[in-house]
Image 1 (cartoon, one colour):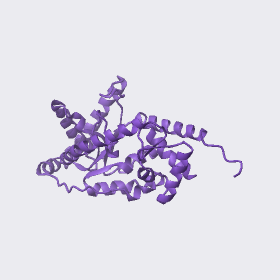
Image 2 (spheres, one colour):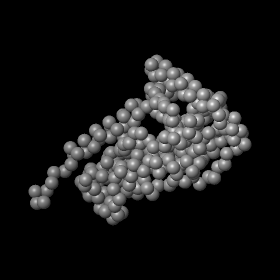
Image 3 (cartoon, helix red, strand yellow):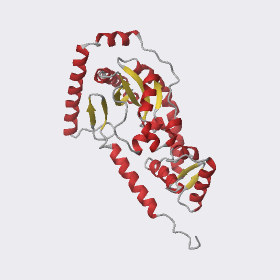
Image 4 (cartoon, helix red, strand yellow):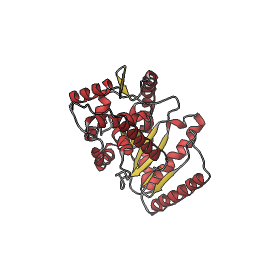
Length: 307
């Protein structure tokens, strides 16, 4: 695959989000490892043929300076939310059976618009995901009382028995390479190692940050609750809460319920995971990505008759 195509793949993906990128970011998300000099030469060639546009140090498929302004505002707001997310992560780590917390979504890519949520990726102890999830979502319901519900969006759970992500594509690879470690280094390291398949899409995954800087320790209340449910009662309760939650979400889907952002509610559940249904947002993004690549292929300049 020519370097030109590799570069355009990165730009096409982020164009779906109206997000111009720097040369350093393009190199990080490339499907190959190359010297900076080769990337610079490739970018200059694409800019010269006006397939790419260079705007104030950023690159984009469209010559729209307002996208850069939008990005810079989003980066600034992300700095503010990341401080809140750090505190939120340490709080969520104190819930029973939580073994690791990561910051995901747009915030993990250092962007947040005025309507942004703080999304978390949660790893739990094996066979206790549904107890942990229930405790955490009861807390989220309380956060509505203070208007801080958007600070606690726990939308992706796996337990230590199912660390490898099932869907393997450019969308999930991008989410994994940008996931920000917050708490729980032991489980996070195992998680990143279990998903080394990402390197087949994004080779720089092997060099990504894998450790949280905060050394968070479990509190006494967390230890007591975990001890209390470390038995058959805990096994039964975890299964019961999974069945209950699955039934409730099936009803929401049948009713066509929408989220606060107008998106259709959908959840894919199992004993060892709870995550957004890939048939929703993930499928939409992958379809849009393929279409953009096809459009760019049609715009490929004709070869010179002298070559």
